[in-house]
Structures are given as C-alpha cells and as structure tokens.
Image (cartoon, rainbow, N blue to C red; front, top):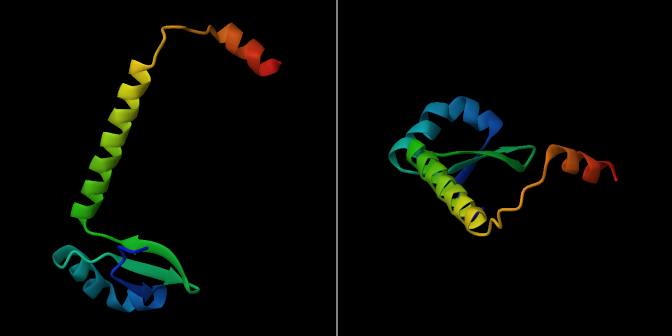
Amino acid sequence: MDTVTSAVTTRELRSQLSDVLGRTMYAGERIGVTRNGKLAAVVVSVADLEALEEFEMMQDVAAYREAKASDDGARVSIEELRADIAS
C-alpha cells in the first residue's frame, strides 16, 4: 500500500500503542500493523475513516442513480424468480 507511512509489528504495537495513536491522530500517519511479516491492519485517523465513509457513500449514491436511470420498469414476481432459480 502506497499510503501506509510506516509499519509496526503486533508486538511493537502493544508496547507503542500510545505513540502509534498519537502519530495517527496528530500527524495523520497511516500505520500498518504486520503479523508474521504480512500487513494485517492499518491504524488510521478518524478523519481518514470519515473521508473513506463519505467516499463510499458517494459511490453508493452514484450506483443508485445509475441503476435508477437504467431501470426499464420491468418487474419479476417472486414466483417467476423462484421458477427461474429452480430451472
């Protein structure tokens, strides 16, 4: 991940949690947490999380609008759906 600024192991995280939180909160760092040499998680600030959630919401709204615009009005009854699945 190009946006992870540094990494700590799970063991280091236990001993440096306060420092890691401070770096994410105040310096805006994105700190990767590794387990057995592989990236397992990323500690991010609340601002980063909120921005991610806003981005996801915008994608959902765009997908909804696209689906609504392409809706041809055709509907399928539950019986038709069940018959289609069964065949």
